Image 1 (cartoon, helix red, strand yellow):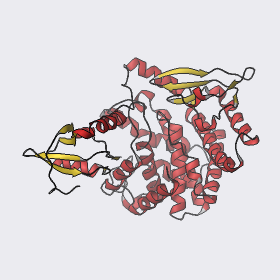
Image 2 (image 1 turned 90 degrees about the horizontal axis):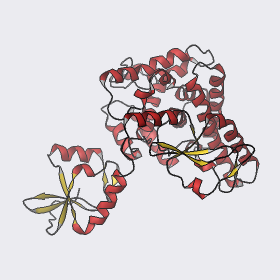
Image 3 (image 1 turned 30 degrees about the vertical axis):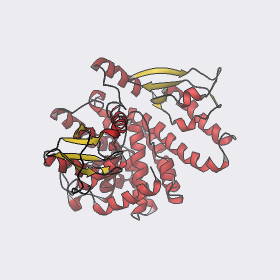
Image 4 (image 1 turned 90 degrees about the vertical axis):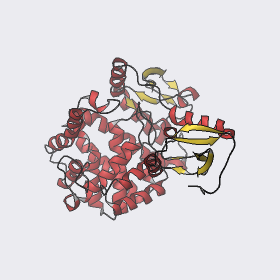
Amino acid sequence: MANSEELHTGPHTSVELGKLVEGTALPFDVFIKDNNIFIPLFSKGTMYNSSANRILREKGITTIYVKDVDGPVLEQYVAQQSGQRPPVPDPETFKRYIAEKDSHFVVDRSFLIMSTKVTFSLYSLNNFSLGMLVEADEKTPAIIDSRVLTAPGDIVIKPTDVPLYNAYINALLATGAVMAKDREKVKRAAIKENSKMVLKDLLENPRSGEKIKESITLVNKMVDSILENRDAAHDMLTLRTYDYYTYTHSVNVAVLSVGLGVGVGLPREELEKLGIGAMLHDVGKQAISPDIINKPGRLTDDEFRIIKTHVTEGEKILRENHDIPDAAFFAVSQHHERLSGKGYPHNRSGQDIHPFGRITSIVDCYDALTTERSYQQARTPFFALSILTREGGDYDVDYLKVFIKMLGEIKQ
């Protein structure tokens, strides 16, 4: 906070405190008003965090002030923070949107390289509607142009075209479309895309022994890549999508969990088990109604009770498969447990929570907070970490320190 002895008079604009967004750097000086005197509160460039917000509200401060000269900057800041999402549509339209989202596969637009040919149609999922971007098939391929690369929202394909998308990625690696210096990076990103494909299929058919085996194979590739090069974690993360997809979240949790496991010194064999459990941790969500999973706004108590069953449902389904190592189930069954005992489903606490549970609980919460939702803007990494570090002993402090250091290294 700024020096409270430095007082200012002159023209100022009042702003509701709620306009300041936690986890953002303030592009203007902020003041409070006392007896018609403006007292500096935050200097330009200050990171506004949850602690500052809580302190101000506890003091009863609901209005802050910005110099009139900073009015245009204020308007731009508010627009950037609040204008990212359209209003949630009526229930029927939203339900149709969810059905369209679930019936398509989101692709990584970084693989869509200018002037390359695709043999599958591309669609834009934006503002709660699905629109055709490129119409193509094996007989009539299409060329990727700037319209595709700058399309808003998520770029998605039909699930039946996933094999063609996979072939397209492999062709990029086999030809000169990818520069030699970028080839290893693209190979790692391809592991992520293949993992997403397998996870989407598995979530629709969680008892598929074939998809479980494919998941295990991909986790091993993931582990080897991260052990070989810590930067691989960044290449295998899905960093930006318009909406939340359980399969991209599952892959992110696996990547970050393995990365954190490497950071805390787990041996190769344990990293594999951790990665398998992290990759499969949300399989039980297939038993939950999409209306609850995707509900905009606050869940009722009954809906939250149903959501919590995904942990036990997932473990029950996966226990039927004997290819999954026993230790992997700690990540599945404990990713919502908290060291304080406030988690679920068994209210475990302290030493009763396995290291895999401690790791995946941190990563699962972090990725959920920093992922875009159709009805909610993603939190910044700073904001997400501020929540994790102040949650009253819920998370392992030593693991958190390593996690924060790791995030700084992979430069999300």
